[in-house]
Every structure is written in structure tokens, then in C-alpha cells.
Length: 283
Image (cartoon, rainbow, N blue to C red; front, side, top):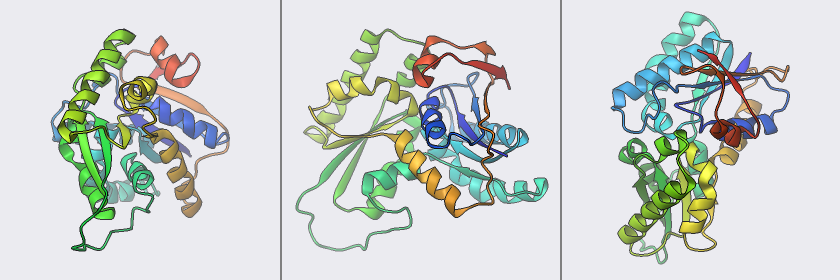
């Protein structure tokens, strides 16, 4: 058995790398749907279908768990797959499998509360609001998943999502740093204007953005804390595996990398996410 990591592109390698550091003896298979990247501007039903196909491929390769290291897939497809597809699929293959996402751990990190917690609705006025900015793809922003789920748990946190059109695509395409800096600065300025002031904290709500986290730090007010999804997701995965021994992560330390796009050696962008060169198999 193994743990699968799925993303529309290579941004999920930032999460995968943290997993490997946390679970050095576990077996991992990474699948990048590069032929269809990015997911952020696609219709919801298409995102569900593409995500399901990626999960099926990883389960067919022997994974017992698949982590969606993609905010768009997690926000749009995860609940649908868990509720309407997985129960029948488990019966068909005759073994326990599950799909987890990246948004739940991020919300737990942002609120400091477990996912199961829901705040009591009170009429008391909140004296001071913690303003949380979420930079994400348009599809993730449109889902309002961060606003909805954080509001259930913390009434003293106000969430503002900023759809960063084309930013994930620019990163995938290896855009010049100056162009990325200009795009990030524009998105930070836009959300600050909407809020009326700078946010107190920020979530980089797309795994691609981790590679340019320093540009967000430069554009945001000095000292603005960033909530990093790779670390939050690794913490959650560790807790989950401890609670669910039926999902065997393997013990051979194997690493495989699959892509729906071009097989073979990957770009310098991939090296930046992973820390060294990689070669992908064709999925």
C-alpha cells in the first residue's frame, strides 16, 4: 500500500515534500494532471470528474489514501466524492480507501480548533475582528469554503478571499520573477482596498503559491503571519494515520511520480518545488 498525492499540476509537490520529510519510510505516489492544469477556471462538474479520475488512477496503483494537494479540487470535488462516489467504489474494489483534502487542515490551523468544533451562535458584539486574507484560484474563491467553514467555528475571524486569476498558470509556465511580483502586489493591493486596511493574517490558498511565499511576504504588511498549507496538512495526515491503522502507508520508502502530461525529466520549476531534479512517468 501507499499514500497518493494528487494535484492539477506540480504545486502539490510542496505538500508532498513535507509528507516525505514527516514519513520517510512510507511509500508515496504523486500524480500531476498537467494536461488539464490549471483547474481554477474550469466548471465545477469538470473539476469533480478530473479529480475522480486522478483518485481512481492512484487507487489502481495501490494507494490506500489519496490526499488532494489542490485547493480547487478539495473545495469543489472532495465532499461530492466522499459522499456519492467512494462508498460504492470501496465495495467494488473490496478494500478500505479514502480521499482527504488540504482545506480542512488549513482551516484547523487558521482557527486553532478541530474540524468537529462549531461555535455557539451568540448575539454578543465582537470587539475586535481578526482579518484573514485567503489568496486562491477563482474556483476556490467562488466556493466560499473558507468563509463558510471558518465562520462556523470562529465569529471573531473575518475572512476575505482574493481570486488570483492566472497566477497558478504563470507559476506553472515558469513566468519571470518580475511578472510574478507584479501580479502578487496587485492582488494584495486589491484585497487591502476591499477590506479597508491590511489583513492581520493570510492563507496561501493554492499550493503553487508556496514557491513565491516570499513575494507575498514582501507585498503584505511587514510581519503578517502566513498559514502554510504543507505543514498543516502533514500534521493532519499524521493524526489521521495514527487513528486509522487500516490505511497502510507502506514501509519501503518508495517514491513514484506520475503525470498526465509529458513524461521524463521535468523543468526547473519542479526542482524548485521538490528540491532536486525529478523524472515523471506517463500516467
